[in-house]
Structure formats: C-alpha cells, structure tokens
Image (cartoon, rainbow over all chains, first blue to last red; front, side, top):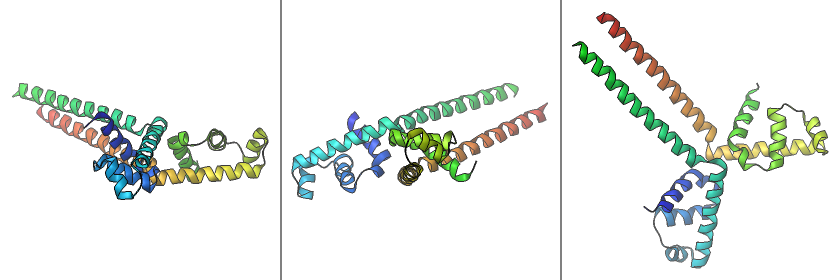
Length: 104
Length: 104
C-alpha cells in the first residue's frame, strides 16, 4: 500500500466520526474499497471534479485534526513502547530461565 | 474536586486544541484557575451571562467530541489494563521469588 494511502486509512480510522456522512462515504469508497473517482462520481451522480474536491478537502481536514490531536502520532509512539516492553519481558524471562538452568 | 469539574478538566485536556482561543481562555480560568463567572466577566469586560453561555456551549462541545472520539473513555480503559498488568507483574515476580527461596 502506498504511504499516503496507509496514512489516510489511519487518519480516517481515528477521525471519521468528525466527518459528515458524505465525506465518510467518499473517503470509505476511495480509500477502503479502492473505487476510482469516476466510479464514485457515477454512484452519486455528481461530477468527477466534485468528488475530487470533496476528497481533497477531507484529507486536509484529517491532517488538521491530526495536527491538533495527534492521535496517530501518539498511537505510533505507544506501539513503540509496547514493543519495547514485550522485548524486555522476553529477554528478562530468558535471563531468569538461564540462571535457573545453571542451578540444575 | 467535584465529579463534573474533574470530568471537564479531563475533557478540556483531551480536546482543548479543537476550541477557539476565547473558549480556551474562559474554560482555563473557570476550571483550572477556579475563577468565578463574575471575575472572568470583569477580566474580559463582558456580561456574566455571556461568560456563562460561552462556558455552557463549550462544555456541550467537549461532550460532543467525547461522544464521537471517546478519548477519555479509551484513556480510562487503558489505565485499567495498565494497572492489571502492573499487579500481575508484581504477583508473578513474587511467585518466582518465593519459589527461589524454597530452594535455599
């Protein structure tokens, strides 16, 4: 998946509740269901340009929300910490088990 | 601290970036610095009623954001899980130490 598509998928996931129904429909068809702009335009009987403008505006809104609330950034930071914790727990358990085996 | 004040402090903490400067000023003076409505009105040379209306609207906005994004709810759920994890880590470490002591 392209980096921008992946980022938009994440931002959409975090902030979709702040969008209008129409914005959600277009974004969901375009980013999740991989519809083309033309297919969405046909589906909603509007121009391809109207769909394009709406999606561009929505993308900008999602980036503005992220600039303010940083939910994706905080999520990614938390994932790093969780992975460090997992690794440390694994390593420590291994250290203990090795020390036990030395007693055998 | 009253339950509502505590909740508003949390919601303000999570969503303040989505408020206007004026909303942030009033909320911050009222909830964080414990100013009265009258003191805020004097400070900004507006009526007490105007301050009251603004704060009530802001409180409603914060609750709407929480209904949509649930940042406070998710934060609280995460705190419960973290505390369970801490407790379990403590208990397991204690179990291991006791088992080691039985070897002595």
